[in-house]
Structures are given as structure tokens and as C-alpha cells.
Length: 288
Image 1 (cartoon, rainbow, N blue to C red):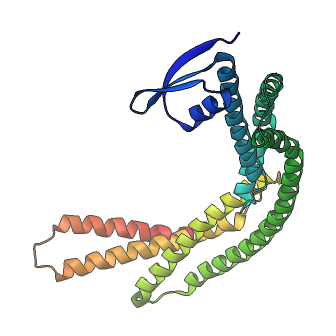
Image 2 (tube, helix red, strand yellow):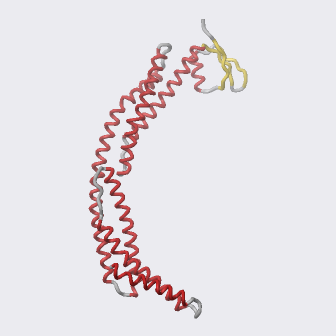
Image 3 (spheres, rainbow, N blue to C red):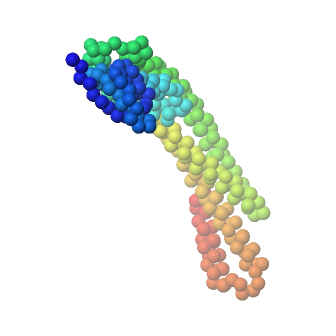
């Protein structure tokens, strides 16, 4: 004897599928957009769980595919390589265990439902695809390890080459600072200051490069390299930079004082400016 029940719900694709496969006994229009469906309670619940199972399998397939795409992606630099290794390590240690538990639950539902109904061809293909994805994951992680190994070798070689070129760059900058010892034309002061400022900016960028080198060395578990020539070059440049900037500031103020009407500037302010500039200039020889 069958147990029948009555449900009211809007028309939708999933509900139509349930009603169709469960075997609708009667359709009676009750209101716009709604129909009265009468079907076997057991069949209805069984087919509801089938559709839920299919939705779960689709989600698992999509997540396995996303994991595969992530694991097999090619990092563009050392930072991305480190990030990829950490991400995949978490996937293997945590995410895959969660997916395996979800897959086990899906398998239990599949076994249970197969005792009471027959799956369609499309449903069987999806069920099979879900377990095939899981079976492919060891191969995916194996290929991931190959990608990581290849990129690690590539970026290690690139790092060594960049460090060698960086040392050459530091040596060139150090030689450029030596040129300032021969400069003494006051009329060329703006040119000297601009060159010193440009070199100072370049050395600041060098400091960022050193930090990047050390980060990559840590990633490869190498000993961090030090660049004493960088600090020596900075220390040698700073007195010249200070001298040129102070001198240019004084020259500009002097021009303003000379070209302004008498009484525009307080003599005491001028005296303080001159004393401050002279004090800085007197310190420079001791720093060179």
C-alpha cells in the first residue's frame, strides 16, 4: 500500500525533475505559478536525495578541479613559488582530508540509494567522475612537485646571476662617489647636487634589492648575503650630498637677500641662517 501526500510549491527545474521521476499521480492548478502535486512519499524523498547527491558531486568535482589548477599553476617568481608551496602543503594536509570525508559520505549515500532506485546514465557518469577526480589527485601532486623542483632550480640560478650583477652595480656607484672629490667649481653646484641626489636615490633602491635578495635566500634556506660595500658607499656619499644641498640652499637664500629691498629681512635671521650653514659646512671635511 502506497502512502501519498500533497505539496504546494512553485515550478522549478529541480522540482519538476523530482516530480517526473517520482511519478506524479495528479496535477491540479490551484493558483498562478503553482500546481498541486501528488506522488509517492517514498519516491519523492528518494529522488530528492538523488538530486542532492548530484549537487554534492558537482561541487566536489569543481573543487577537485580547482585544487588541480592551483597545484599545477606555474609561479612567476620566487615569492609566488613560496606562496604556491605553502598553499599546496595546506591543501594536502587539511583540504584533501576534508574532501575525502565528504567523498566517503557521498559514497555512503550512493550505496544506500542504489538499493532503492536506478540511476540514469548522466547520474552514473557524474558519480564516476567524482571518484575519478579523487583518484587523479596523487598524480596531480606528483606533477606539482616536478613544477616546484623545476622552478626552484630556475629561480636559484636567476638569483645568483642578479646578485653578481648587483655587486657590479655597487662597485660602479662607489666609483661615481669618488668623482665628487675632484669637483670644485661653484658654478657647477646645481649639477653636483643633482648627481648626488640621483645617486642617493639609486642607493636607496639598492637597499630594497638587498632585502629582496635576503627574502629569496631565506626561501631557498640559504645563508643571507651581506653587502658592506653598499653601506660604505652610502656613508661616503652622504657628506657630499649634505654639502651640496646646504650650499645650494644658502646660495638661493643669499640671492633672495641681495635682491630684496633693504629692511625686508631681519639681520638677526640672516645671521642665524649663515651660522647654521657654516656649521654644517665645517663638519663636512671631518666626514670625508
